Length: 156
Image (cartoon, rainbow, N blue to C red; front, side):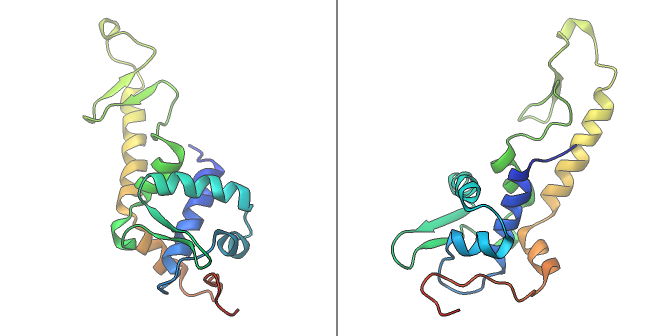
């Protein structure tokens, strides 16, 4: 299963926001520069993260972005689903909100899908790993690399 650059870049953006311990929001340009990512693409991603309530934006000369919640309360499942949509291991796999899995290529009267057990386990493993990993876990793992972007209006 491959995630797109939306997930990769979005997680990196969230880690940069999580690493910043100042009270001022960070400019998206400084985050893009620190992570060597395209600013225009980051604008698209941060809009999705903002819509999901994972980041907040502040307008004005000292505006920018900050986390919407404490890093320990933000799971990577929330981040990845905000950016990628529902996680599915196969095109025919449809996980319902109740946790039940349906195969889109079979009608109920066709009987069970021969591979349903496999894809249900794959889905469960991936979503469990993402659900159990918080933003604070990644921030701690990244450590202090000394590459924190500067808040808007701060001396470099």
